[in-house]
Length: 169
Image 1: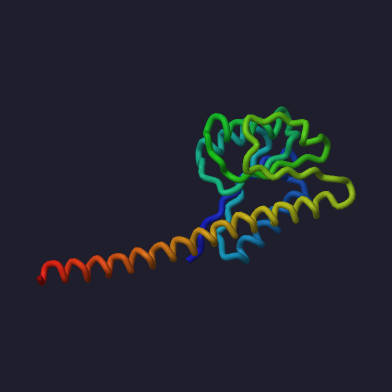
Image 2: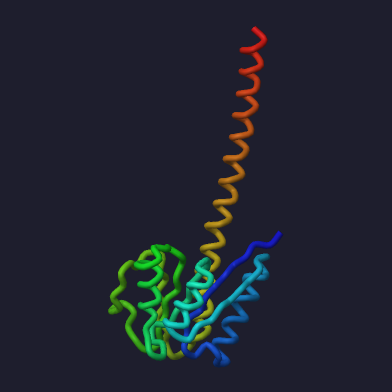
């Protein structure tokens, strides 16, 4: 059984070769981890908002700071302030200092400042690192669920034993 992993990537240059390659690398990585992968794309805040309203369950939001007529911080503020959702967000920029960006809520956001030398390689590595972190958290939840179910089963058996003893005497 494969689980779904849904990403929405907001980038005004999303159709360029480097970003298409990054999307393929991310998709392949997740498929290698046995996920069904869906990557939605949007070029600006308005397109993001429209797609988010249609399907508001994403496991990861990736956004650039500088978009065509908008900014990535609008994406983050919309998700955090209007929707009150703590979905993991990967926030990056090549042209601006991210630390100067004002956000309504900056929890569960990974910031990445791109440099000129290995910009796309480092961006891809950082996105994969965040995905691996979220997968790891999920795996811990699955393990905890198994332990809780085991304890519940043990409790059910003890309860049945006590009830049988009570009604037999």
